[in-house]
Figure (cartoon, rainbow, N blue to C red):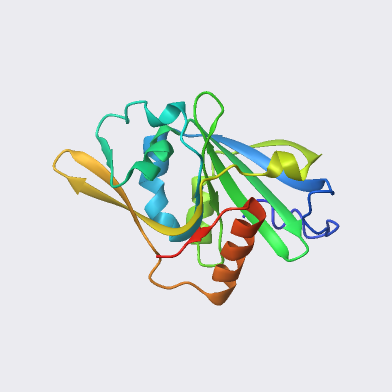
Length: 192
């Protein structure tokens, strides 16, 4: 939510492939285990996992397990790239979890159902990047699918297990935004 107020007087433009989009961006240095520990506090988010990459074969951080293979890349996070914009249908904000090689692990979208205070706390160490118009192609997220999730971390002996489940409740507005983001990313929205 860092950029929403900064955009209060910005011009509003539709998101299309032919138009450059003005976005605010910041970066946060964050290890995967730090991110995983914070994810449950967010509540409902839309997750767009990246296609399999080199980070998928890398070992998980010590003391961590994942419930399913699609969650493993989140534990390889090295940096968060946070973006926000105002589109024709309102504000949007998302986090790109990047590995040490600068490759996308997953994109997490803020929803009306997300805990905004936890989202802001996750980004408290952020460093602003220069604002510049980006093409829709540079904003695109190459994802395998989109999924509405609520993360959990469960302690099993000396290990932490990163789990996920569909949100128990989701507002119609949140569901609508999730469908629009999935449509824009040209991926299917998994239903739980």
